[in-house]
Length: 380
Ligand SMILES: *[C@@H]1O[C@H](CO)[C@@H](O)[C@H](O)[C@H]1NC(C)=O
Ligand SMILES: *[C@@H]1O[C@H](CO)[C@@H](O)[C@H](O)[C@H]1NC(C)=O
Ligand SMILES: *[C@@H]1O[C@H](CO)[C@@H](O)[C@H](O)[C@H]1NC(C)=O
Ligand SMILES: *[C@@H]1O[C@H](CO)[C@@H](O)[C@H](O)[C@H]1NC(C)=O
Ligand SMILES: *[C@@H]1O[C@H](CO)[C@@H](O)[C@H](O)[C@H]1NC(C)=O
Ligand SMILES: *[C@@H]1O[C@H](CO)[C@@H](O)[C@H](O)[C@H]1NC(C)=O
Image 1: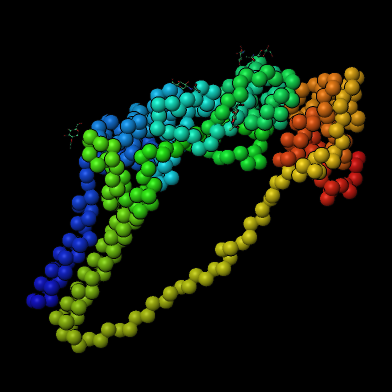
Image 2: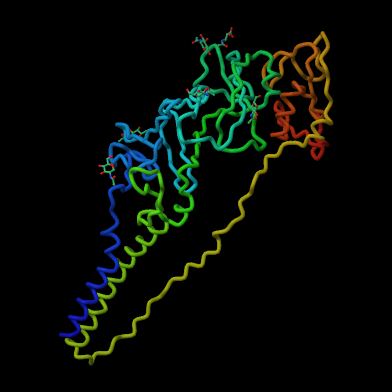
């Protein structure tokens, strides 16, 4: 029975080659996970509860709470929940346990931690009368109550322009994007806080699919360990498992068939030529162009071309306007600068409407497009 011997030898070699990396993949600093989190904890992070003391880098200690959420304790800013850790880009995404990130940002201090913000933007916090909940601004709900409304804007002009509000403070706030053409009316600061770290730098190692670790207890020297479990190494393992689950049954079948044909049928029977019909699913409908809506504001020269008026003592405005700016809901005062949209004659504080038109091409009251291209719209 040479065929059988050969078969078992082959199977043994196969098992050895494909399974041995799986068996040897464990080490004492293996990754761990909090049961209600979607990411693993590994170098430079560690959880003292699950891993030996020497698995992480100083300042990168995490804990799992009773709900299985990952918690980071910043020395000068307190506890944050961790939404995600990206080991490749070296970013950690945090949120407030009480879902009110703005309160935490008002007294945020990264001193004593290895993390830094990606960007900072100066935000001005304002406290306003409660009717502001109906204004064009996004209100920070968790900092507002029935009498006082809090909002934040990164436009100092806008903050100074709203005369019914009191400026609380202007602070550099950590943000995850540099300032583009950001909407100053809807800065609600409730997005997750994204921080990054520079030391230890494992980006190169991670990009090769390997994993960083400490060389030994005493030094903070890091080494790149080619450890299956992440990135490319992980894909290799998946590949091995797939091979294993497909190739082994196929080969076993082939051997069994050969065995059957050779010994039982005596090699006399001819295999019937079975043809398989491959249904070709050539459905070309997959790519349909999506209509895209581009919400564009107006350029500075167009905005500047609209009439500006300085209000007199009578505070009377031209056209269909009352005594309140409908963007910031403040009453007009004497000597304030007002700008009116020519097409519909609606007027607003110049600071308010300029900022608005840079983001939205339409009048905030009647939603008519005031741009010259639509200027021939009939005026009722
Ligand atoms: C997981 O977390 C969510 C919210 O963070 C919580 O509502 C839920 O109870 C947690 N699950 C368990 C099993 O603790
Ligand atoms: C942050 O905290 C450190 C230490 O408590 C303190 O020295 C520093 O002034 C704080 N920075 C700010 C901006 O409050
Ligand atoms: C924030 O304001 C301070 C003081 O006015 C200024 O020094 C700093 O450059 C500003 N930061 C940003 C990001 O604009
Ligand atoms: C609302 O909040 C302000 C502080 O923002 C506080 O002074 C005021 O007493 C609060 N009012 C009520 C009714 O809680
Ligand atoms: C809350 O609103 C009241 C009345 O609008 C105002 O007098 C008070 O200063 C506001 N409180 C804060 C903390 O701004
Ligand atoms: C590393 O430190 C741990 C305890 O902190 C100790 O048990 C272990 O022997 C140390 N290993 C080496 C190689 O120094």
